[in-house]
Image (cartoon, rainbow, N blue to C red; front, side):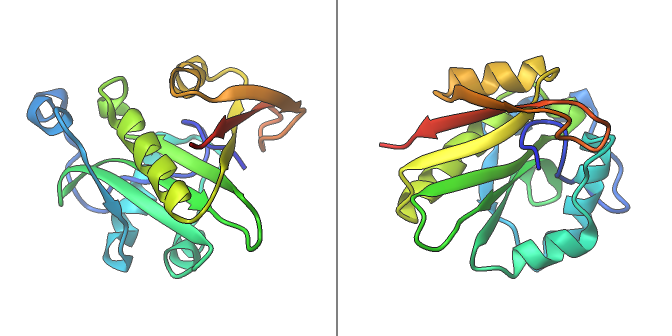
Length: 177
């Protein structure tokens, strides 16, 4: 699956979505933390707001939150305003971690949330002993591609018709120090 702004990620259940006026102080330094089971409703809601297809389901999030081979992170302005999320996978006996999903709330895009999540993902992968991080991103997702390239990812391949709507994906990799 992807890991840019297309596939998996969430927002909030029955909350009022933050407007741009709510964001300036929040975005000045989003807090990134490991997601908890209590975040499930907000994760699913963010996923719905962030992606039009290739979404993670509630069951998938529940499984990832309970898995030793997955790490779900959330970026927030406070505990009640999710700005983004990331899902990272680890394989036993592999030095390569996979960024499966990176989502940023539409109203928070371009304000450092993705960069904060990427830094946290890289740190978590290093702590788990990973030497590289891989991901896929839609070939038409220019904003995500710029973000990944700015953060040291290099293009290593392409998957034809990777997404459920038939869109292609670029494969990217970052070497971790």
